[in-house]
Image 1 (cartoon, one colour):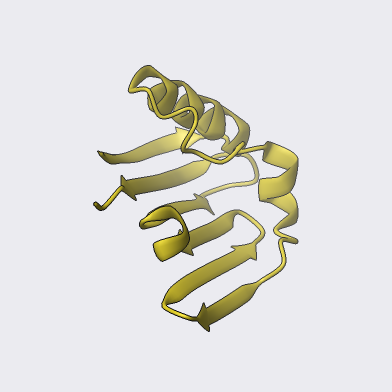
Image 2: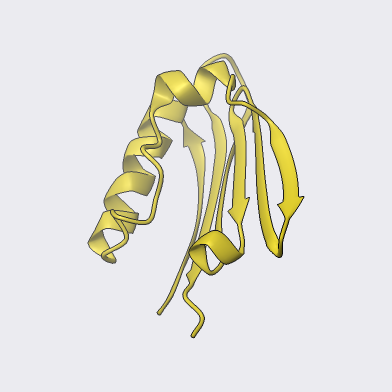
Amino acid sequence: MKFEIEITRHNISPAAFLSYVRRQVDKKGGEWIRSDLDIDYFKAGNDLNFDIKHDGIYERSISKPYEMQTYIKDGASLYNEICEFTFHDEKTGTGYYYLANVTEG
């Protein structure tokens, strides 16, 4: 299986952007792949940051306010998710989302 989606939206609030992304990913059948994309989690950016390599498995997670990246290789046969938001004023800005899922084998 190969699932890939890339979304960019301008002049949008973070909550509206995440809602749009969830709907678009779900429309393509990826609701079981994507993360929850919760606005409170996205704002806080307080995920445990880790970068682990062991026995051929690679896991990575970076989370800052309005920026997240997840990457897992062999444990999920490659899974990637990037979600970023850049503010242009106090309420709106540009959101970018990219998800890739490749099941090898």
